[in-house]
Image (cartoon, rainbow, N blue to C red; front, side):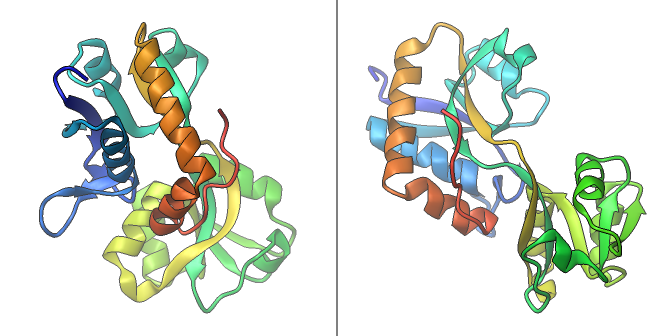
Length: 231
């Protein structure tokens, strides 16, 4: 607060959470959340691009004050950093073109669904799908996405970030969110001992949940409202 600047680590290669827009500036849900926090704190925002591998070290070495980069909370990470309340959903879901209606697992019957073999989506979809769903398994996310885009399957079961890339790069597919498979929300990472900052950020998240800002953000970038997120 005394320096009037906050350094927030964000992804720049992970649509729709954080990526470089046509004007070469970072955009996405995580970037919008970082902007909101800086505004509410009344300080200048310094965006620090990070990858999955270096986002936690950046917090530990004080290169970033906060990490807003699709960070899931688990016991291993909680040993080295702290977390705020959840600020956005991260989920695996079935996606497909607007002209195919899927509202329940029963609607998948008679349809072909691309999925990455052995991925969380494969495991969860296999549990969820009734008999009569044609699940086509591919070797990695890129091949799965390409198969769907090429029309080899009618639907795709994949993580929200990969679906975001499909929507961004292949608008002709008219792809949209259809059916939730599994939810694993994102939290903001913060260095151990920064309890005052964590309390302040939690206040901002709580207010943004209450006034609908977080739902709007989620709808805009992920195609569905955030719904109930853990504190």
